[in-house]
Figure 1 (cartoon, rainbow, N blue to C red):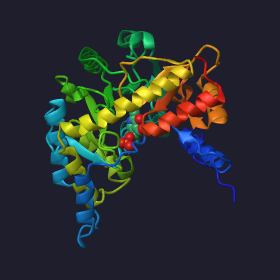
Figure 2 (figure 1 turned 120 degrees about the vertical axis):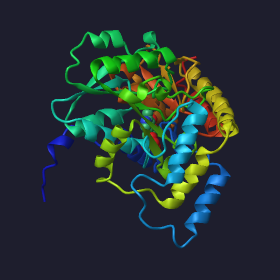
Figure 3 (figure 1 turned 135 degrees about the vertical axis):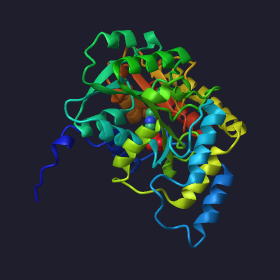
Length: 390
Ligand SMILES: Cc1ncc(COP(=O)(O)O)c(C=O)c1O
């Protein structure tokens, strides 16, 4: 049978990593296992108390029913407490918070709630590919805004103000920025809020990396008046080592939460109750949890630096988040060429920066989600394969 796919999907290919993982699986069947430093999926477990709560509640007979679309009150309260404790942001758990099945689904919900054909959405280039896909699915046009090392990977808001913004409804922002690891300054967040207010644009800030290797987690919502013009997505995937559990959240003004609920409640239902209870526990952990995690990532990052040094790549050592973003040597045409060579010769996968947009062509990204011994092995494979420059 032949059946035409909908127009909205015609320019949306299968997700890059979904295809790449198949290629890596095929390589794995032909010999030495590929070391995958492509994806930011934490390999460390959640805190034992989180597992204990999941286990305890999942063992009960009466915890398996459908759940409220807005999540249980205990989880929303834990999310509000977490925002207050770590970001200094006050949110009403009943009106300003919507638990999500991971923040990635939130990106689609936001785009489907606000965008349609004829609208435009500003997107970071380089940036997380899911923003562009979600905008495309909504029927709106994605308008990339350039980020560069020269401007510390922050958008040129003055430059954007000189462009036609009459169709722009939303602007996606993401700091700490993935893939570059750049942090925003408070001044930039203030300017972004003022910009959004002036041009009547909804700022959509995606904030899953704020705890990783960062001393001071930052929320865009800490800027005065931000709730008038901004929403923020957050996630337990990275900061609580719960990527597979699918727990995220949206924070915003009551009206925004209600609007986005109109879409979301037609797409999915509330999360498994024990997952929500365990997530509430994860959010109640004190600073020591994040410090311990970051001590591990600090050590791993040194190993990744050594590997990238060996490849002749250059990087900014102030970056944060779960990856290291590095400029490739001039001897390679782009990050795809370097990534392919490293994969073929040393069976290590690092992500070509070009998958995050044209602004990432000259870069590669290596994940910190691998044990130190694995990172040592990756380095030795590269040295053995003699693709090292240094
Ligand atoms: C910038 C960014 N936003 C969102 C996500 C999705 O996170 P979640 O697991 O909460 O859906 C990722 C995952 O890699 C990401 O890099």
